[in-house]
Structures are given as C-alpha cells and as structure tokens.
Length: 452
Image 1: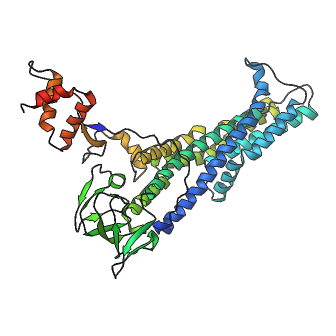
Image 2: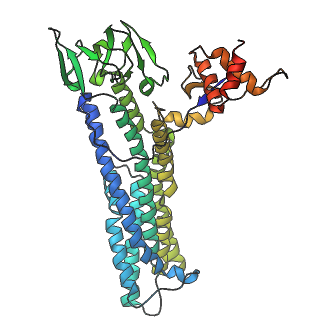
C-alpha cells in the first residue's frame, strides 16, 4: 500500500480578485497589499508597453538595412528612413521609459545596476542612430553611416518582455498570499457577557473574547476550545491532510475549517498575532529578500556599468587613432555599449527565483528563505515527518497479485475486500475503493466473501 502522490493543481488564473484585508488588523500586511496592487498595475503597464512596442518595432525591423543581406525582400521605399525615425523615437520615449526612470533612481542612490546599463544601451543606440540619420540625410551623399534603430527596437522589446514575465511570476506568488488571507471569514459570532450571540467584524474581535463556530464554518481566530468536540480540517493552514480531532482545551488555528460539531473558542490570537498572519508575513519577507546569486548579479551589473563605459572610451580612442574615421570609431563605441547590456545577467536569476517561489506558493510550498531554493541543489536526501506532506493522505492499491495458484488476482482482492468490508480504517477504504474501481461482479464478490 502506498500513498497517492498529490496531483498538481493548475493555478494558471492569476487575475486579481478584490479582497477586503481589513479583517487582518495588520497595518504592515495592509501596506503589503497596497504595494501588491501597485505592482499589479505596474505589471499591466509592462504588458501593454511590450505589445505596443512590439507592434511599432515590426516596421522598423522590416525596413532595416540589415534585411538587405537576409532572405527577406528589401522593403525600403522613398521616405522610409523618416518613418523609421518617427517609430524609433516613439519607441524610445514610450517603451524605454521604465528603464530610464529606473536608471535615474539607481544613479540617485549611487548604485548603478541593470537598469542603468539598459538605459545606457538604448539611449546611446537612439542618439547615435539619430546622429547617423542626420549625417545620411543632410551631409554625406556618397557614404552611409550605419544606424542602430533595429538594435534599439529589439533591445527594448526583449527587456520589456523579460520584466513582464518576471513581474507576472512575482504576482503569482502574491496571489497565493491573497488566497491564504481569504481563509479567514469577515465576521465572527461573539458570546456576550449576558449570553447573547453578537456578530461583529473580525477586525473588532479582541483577545480574551469567546466566539461560537458552527459546523462547517471557518474558525475566525486562533484560540482554545472552551466547550464542544469536533474535527478540524487544517490542510490549507498546516498541510495536515486529515481532519484533526479537537476537544475541550485543545488549540485551534484561525483559517482552518470546523467539522460537524459546534464549538466555543476563547480567542488567543487575532490579526498580526494570529498563526496565519505570521505565516503570511514570513512568506512576504521571503519574497522581498535576495538570494546570494541575485546579490552577486546586482554587484556584477554595477561593476559592468563602469567596465562598459571604460571599454567604450578605450574603443573610441583606439579606433580613432587607427582608422582616423570619427564615424567608424563612434560606431564601434556604440556597439560596445549595446553589447554590454546584461540581458541574461539582469533577468535570468531574478526570473528563475521569482518563478520558483510563485510555483511553490501556488502548490502549498511556503519558502522561508529564497536562498533555500539555491541550496536545494546540494541536497542528497529529504526526510518528511508525516503522511500528507507530499501525498493526499489517501491510501490506494497500486498493485495486487495472488501467490496461491488456486486463486486469481481478482479473487484475492475480493477476499481482502470481504475482510475489510466492515472497517473504516484508511487501508480498508483503499482496498474497497479498488474493488469499486474494477467494478467486480456483485455475485462473485458475495460468493467469495460468505465463507469469511
């Protein structure tokens, strides 16, 4: 007998739902949720900016001189250079705005990192291309100075796409926190001193009061049972898949589901002091902290800013001395700065960590430290302390075989079912479920089970 492995649930729907978190009575969590909403709006802007930028990039790419050397036909027509300039200008102002704003913030803090490099790459690409356009259109008739409008468009598109995906992953983890907050009801039924039952908002419940929890209701706060016996489903809070029997003086956790009995609970924790709130705060802190790899990436990105600028200046000086051609030296300098833009360095590590955290949160795996995700690659073995951690907690028959040739496999299984038919043990339930799944004939089942 083995436990069935948990089926991964599809939580692809990451749409925000309107949630009232005032019942949590936590200013810190409220602030987190407001910040979460702001991030959602920012992610929507990133998504819109990506698609708009992509649409405006297609004509730039199609009209690029680079396509003259490819399999695609040359689509250049009189005035196409002006069209490319207009589209690229819009693209730089509209699609490049998040990176330019981010670079300003980094430079203000004197910590140039990835945003500074991206802003440097797209800014140099645009203004050099503007310079090349001016030279080609108004000054030089027999030569052509290469522009970087094609590189500008693709660079902005790629970086917008990466940031959109990263923010979407972070939002998915945030949505998992919202689902945890939704475990708590909005109101609680309080037992007054005169014995009356008064329903009041959860954020007004204080420690020491007594609440009534009817069968099937969510337990509103942490507490101790004063009266009544029941079973409590704590699966969504603690991971324990089976209902836990609770009697007088036993502790209950806010957010768990009461079973078939009504109970009176003395409140011991609510709001920020509640178990569920502490778990949410722990996960929220884990999402904010950086892993070692992310810290290293930020430091490298900061150093890369100075390295790229230094290499660009050196490139300009060397090429100007060697060739004596200012335009050629400037072109090589811009190429160095564009290549230095850290596509993978700036996005890969944060994206992987954020995505891993969100997938884990959606499937009930709450990470206390993001560094643990990196350390997990060095693990040789993992020990789990209870049934239901990695399984559904429902026993099932995976295989069965008769060792006595006098009986078939089905007969042996039917005999086992006959023996377990009067039991409610989890193993018995698994055997009887297998009989039902195989749809064994009732006559055969009864015939075999009578002698037992």
